[in-house]
Image (cartoon, rainbow, N blue to C red; front, top):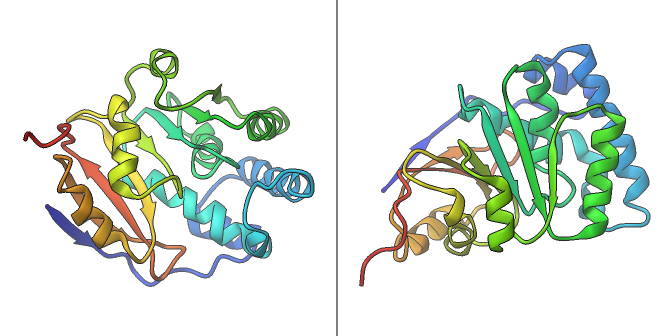
Length: 224
């Protein structure tokens, strides 16, 4: 089943000040994000972390796009981000969660160089986060992670395949938050032919055509 939720008009987020005004973060948190942006720009020269064309709009395309997920999971304490890449959305959530006592974030990434980047950002921003260098589908990875309240992933796979990767970490109580593009409705319909779940599509604050697939009541594969 697919429900749709809409937000108010999307804000314009071009700078650190715009981000602070939109998400009401502390100066300390903003300083962490400014450091993150600088490290991203520096590491990008050696490691392909994000699409080069998005480097001029980091605060909207990557930071705001990630930060908006936190609002969709009030009261949830344990987060897992799979296929973390350059840290979106998981490391942004970890940085923002420094203002929310009791929230813990784990990142899962198979690329060793990207894990090195994530650890550098975490160290230089003094962000408590657990980084796993491994494949999300491996039994070893699943054992390390344990049960979580929220699973996130961005630009990792179409929803049907993504639910297959996330399935070991999902159950009827777990929340899945998966940013999607303009084909979100089609992805949900295709996934519903294989998996049992409920989905709400929430308009993205950072992408006019984007939607966030909010997955609840995940109950595994359909029978037959």
